[in-house]
Length: 392
Image (cartoon, rainbow, N blue to C red; front, side, top):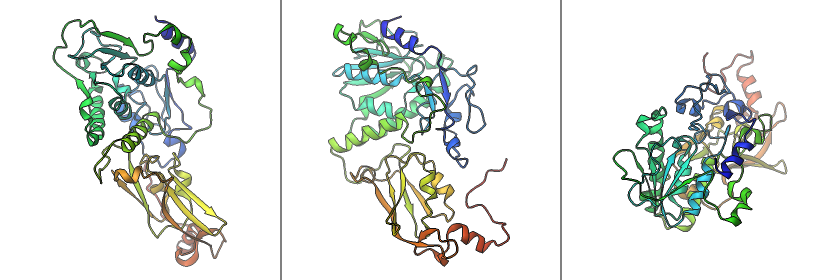
């Protein structure tokens, strides 16, 4: 065991290898969520059907395929992607190939590869964002080694990895960088090439770098770092943040054609119609604070929307009692990276409910808030819920 790997193992003692934080999970934040991302990707069926779900550690294969698909960073485990990115930076100017730690022939290399880097677990731990970030690094090329997946117990994840790679390439294609990253899924890779092979957790370091381990390694992000009882923080999941950062960097530094549409999954544009009553329920339900409700001097209101933060969970649409919110998929690139702090989706003057005095949009029909309007239309208390309800 190498020095850095040993430090990681010691630091991880007593920590659960992988867990779901119910306080962060969309199902824990709002019972209206219909997110199934982790269950759908799990090859072992180790994620329970209850909401919020739990992970059966005896059944779990620790493949980490669920980490990049969780939109709100609710699944916590050792981070094996960040060390890979740091190795990618150190290998700049060279061609690399990326392997899992189960690969039986790491010493053999694809044609042209100068550095092989292997990570802990399956390559399914790499999300679309990680692949896009690799594709934008100063590397001659990146090859994902999948040629032995068919013989692995995690082989069912190969289509998932390939699908993410295609999504990443579709993003990079707008800047003619799609060819920078590819996969090798069959064929011979030749004999021992003598190229360097790095463990992403324990890359070769100089004497000076040994005194900067905390900077190089960054420390493991296991469950024990914050604990499951920590209050939820509303922020983007790491892989989504990588997509946002990489696209933003490309948009600012590379020339693009006008009107290029984002083809990456998970980018959306919201609309709010005149039916809005300014109740603010949508803003309170948003798990990433992509939609903000603001008031000024109790006279005016506005809804600000940050498309980079929106994960398309549709909680705002489901909780809106008047169905005033619409969603558009794959918005124009300029709508996501306009440079504005937020899009003003709707604004107006604040009035008061004629019955209870609650603040509402001044042009709200009948001058009643949502609750009073519901009581007016259903005086005996029987009404249809303003959102879809799943039957047991």
